[in-house]
Length: 140
Image 1 (tube, rainbow, N blue to C red):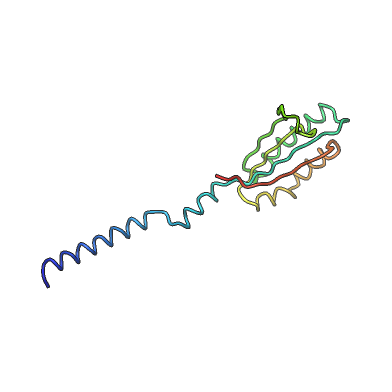
Image 2: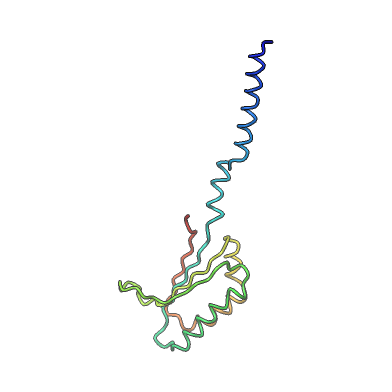
């Protein structure tokens, strides 16, 4: 065999090896597709329209009870809440919005029948005129 042939074979093998290293170090298409899913969060959005008969003290007690759920239910990944400040006038009487975040649907599904959540539903139930619940996956 000629020296040129051996050198070109050796160069080809080295090039193939280098490409294999680069390819193995680069995330696969499947891994790249999975990354956004891992970064997503399941949001459980709850809006309350309280009865006219509910006092500010009743509403404050409900807010505090809801705020306490993350300490009692380990599946809750995040929690935030606020009151409507929109100038658009389209809230249809809904005054309070709560975001409960979960890593998985299984976590949300464990939250719904959890005794602490059921206890909260018992507290809020007599004071709510209407509830709106929407669950969605955040999109990166």
